[in-house]
Image (cartoon, rainbow, N blue to C red; front, side):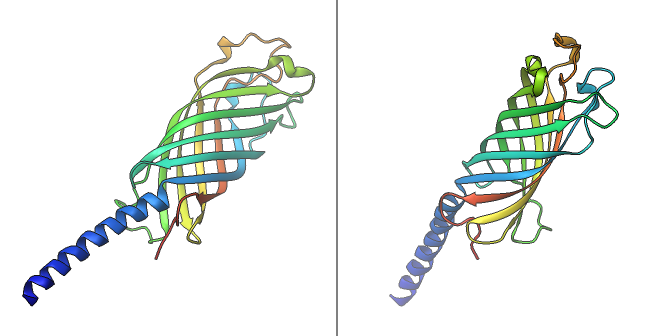
Length: 212
C-alpha cells in the first residue's frame, strides 16, 4: 500500500512540476513591453550625390510590444524613430526617419548552452513601412517605402519583471534613388537603409520575466 502511495505521489509531483513550468512560461513570457534608446547610421547610398549624413546620429528611439506563443518564438510589433543630419562637408539638412514593423521573434538561448542563466539572445526579423520627412523648407521631399528589418538582442534579467538589453538592427529600404522624384534638387531626400544600435528595457506585462 505504501509503495503504491509513493508511486502516485511521485507521478503527481512530476505532473505538477511540468504544469507549473508551463504555467510559469505562460505567465512570465507571454507579453512584454520594450523601450530602447540609441544611435543610428544611415547608409550613404541612400542620399543623392554630394549629400550625406553624419556617421553617428542621435537619437534612435524604439517602442514595441512582444507576444510569445511558445518559449522559443513569438511576434513583435514595434515603432522606431531616427533623426539624422548632414555631415559638416555636406549641404545642410535634417531628416526624421520613422518606421513601423511586424516581426517574427526567435529565442535560441536554450540551444546556446554556454550563456549564463540570466542571459537570453533574441533574433528578430520582419517587414515594415518607412517614413522619411526632411525638416525645414525641405518638407515637400517626404516619402514612404517598404523595408525589411533584421536584428539581434542580448538580454540580461536584473529583476523578476525587468531586463536590460542591447539591440543591433539593420533596416533595409526596399527602394532606390531612381524611384524618387526630387522636388528640391534631391536635397534632404533619403531612399536607403539604416543601421541602429540601442540600449533598452524589456518589462514583463504578465508575471515574472526571470524566476530563480
